[in-house]
Every structure is written in structure tokens, then in C-alpha cells.
Length: 74
Image (cartoon, rainbow, N blue to C red):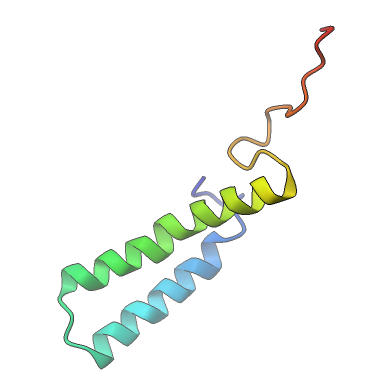
């Protein structure tokens, strides 16, 4: 899921980095909180968004190699 085939990885990593820097500059949040937010935004969010978008579009976002409508006669 977290691969170059997921189009939501790069934007979420950029947003996560900006949020991390913002938390570092504007608050005195601990390193653990900042890293947790970074992991949530850059690691978990693109996977969730990819699955939701895949489900809304009707495709199988988890594995594009799987045929969603297999032929029962094969």
C-alpha cells in the first residue's frame, strides 16, 4: 500500500513534513507527539485515502492484480 503506486503518498508526506515543522516552530509539543503526528499523516493517511477512493470508484485498491469479477466458467 505504501508504495510508488499509491498517488497519495507524496502529498501526504509533504503535508506531514509541513505540519511537523509547524508543530516544532509554533508549539512546545514533545518530540513523541510531533513524530506521532508525522507518522499518522505520512504513513497511515495515504493508505486509508487510497482504500476509500478505491472503494468509492468500485475498484480493489488493495490489490489491482485481483480481478473483481471473476468468470465462474473458468
